Image (cartoon, rainbow, N blue to C red; front, side, top):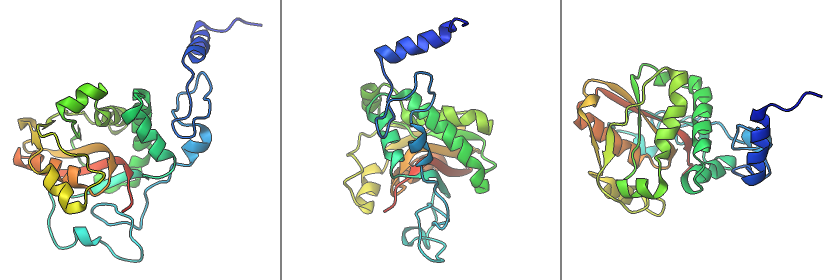
Length: 240
């Protein structure tokens, strides 16, 4: 019997010292597993598919084209699309890279976003990916920006550069316990964009979209810097 390659031996030793588990169900993963989810949980990711609001991708019943929040007014972030719905394994995946330090989970999620991207031809024609930034204090606490890791995982498949040109100067309250109007006020003036945005069509990248308030405020900042067009592609869409 041929000896195991050193790469396989190293993977087994690494697994013994630091065993990897599924980011959602916590089932043990094989030593050489590249996915942060077990096969069952990977298949459990729910694609975000129509019917949904044609602007923000909020799931809609019936034949309505726009949700109430998106009807009758213009937006800085003209389109929002998501690879998956924020339910089941998607929640464990996001928690793993946001709060458990699993950077590789974000890179893998970026690859899954890339696989879902062809479902959205309306997102074609953009020139660069722009990750939604963290406030410097939050970035120091976490050690990385998960939106940047997602963008880096997504970029090769789209043949687009990643431009980290947004900054967040205002530390805001957590958004999860705020209503839509409070979210908007909470984020007002929180972002600024560099001059590289001028004249460009830019695609924002983030992990989860709930009401779209953060993406819209980032869109405003990019337009203030002269961007020609802004849309967004996120890993998961939370249903309201």
